[in-house]
Length: 224
Image (cartoon, rainbow, N blue to C red; front, top):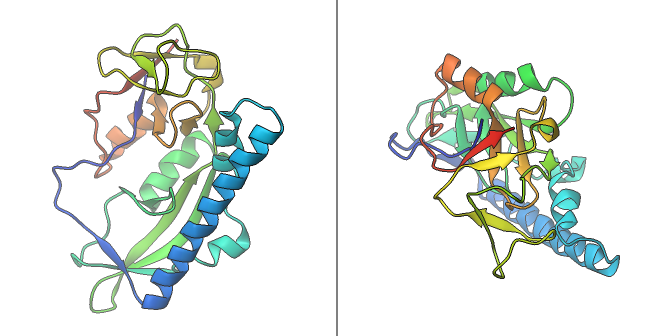
């Protein structure tokens, strides 16, 4: 089994903020750079006559460059004065995670598949609360069985070989198990930026009682 990774909306917020306006401006610059990169990737795929879904692979699977990493903050402030939860969505298609979740991911995929960029978390009185990481998933896989239930095309009436997909929220979705074997988390190239985690990672998350991870998502994907 695999599920879409979502935050638990029932927990109190533990928001972070930038330490300076300069940091905020740098992240805004990074978002603009990534938007342009995504646009150029889509255009290059069209010009080459390739399946448009391959733009997802070309864009999402590329790690941030050293120059792009330098635009990310090295420190963040926790407005609640508590350490961040183990998982939360962030900007620029990144997630903000703790060492615990990073280790859980690496227990399954010790080499490659993910990019982790360190960031320190402080309280509002500048006391360090702990270390965290910006997490970028680099795995992009075409894993959904097109004869599966639970899916529908984003556009058009029929599911075609080049269809981008979305959920019907009525049935479970079948995956090719061999295509996600040994993966902790991935994007499916047909589902845009939905973060999918494997049953193996889900088991570790439950064992570690990792926080702010929604286990009741309706989007369930079965590896078979």
